[in-house]
Amino acid sequence: MADTLAPLTIPPRFRGPTSSGNGGWTAGALASYLAPGPVRVMLRVPPPLDVPLTVETVTDERGHDGARALRDDVLVAEAAPAEADVPRVEAVGADTARAAGASYAGHRFHPFPSCFACGTDRGEGDGLRIFPGRVADDAEDRVRVAATWTPDPSLGGDAASLAVTWAALDCIGGWAGDLEERLMVLGSMTAQVRDLPRVGEEHVVVGGARGSSGRRTFTAASLYAADGRLLGSAEHVWFAVSPEDFS
Image (cartoon, rainbow, N blue to C red; front, side, top):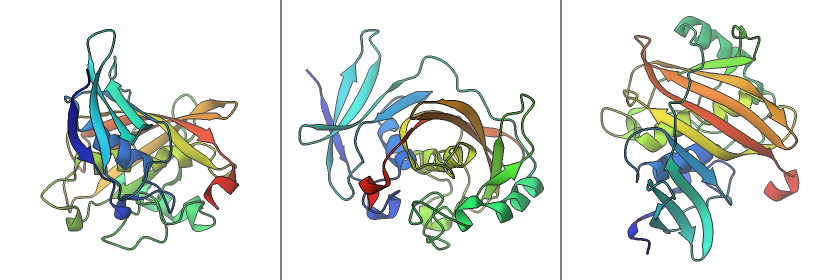
């Protein structure tokens, strides 16, 4: 029998599309119910805003403890420990990442301009305003994008939360993929956060393309501290959706 934990509520500030939660923030918030380490979260439906979600423990066939979030009887998201470390995306320097922001495709067209992580309609101290632009491709000729990010004091405390850190590792993957070509939403995200980013310090976020298959696009991201330390990495699976679903 599943145990019920404290409910999970997604405040409107942490939206992605106008009426649903940012995928990375939602995934990170659910991952925080698990022990530290690599975690995979699958999003089953658009996460509702400002609604207490029931969170239950789940034990898989290997005996690993996971969690799932439900709205009434509807499964919203489920999280489970990942089996392996999440590989990093090759870093770039802060100057390179800062300059890349000038070519951010979201300034020309953004499907979700109110997104907490990468939305152009979000002001300083409100959204994360991570605006990645193209940088030199990696050693395997895969597309990379990069941006700088300085966590705002409005996030509270000396360090950003785990959920905010997952959000910072989220949308940059979409911009490394084919978000400019077709509308996509996050389907699953596997992340490993080694340390939390510090409020008021400049960080570098790097995203990488990892190919596509049918409706699915595969990407990755890494977050680096000012001193070059790897703070966290993520891998994503995105699904192409109809614009009518978000009209």
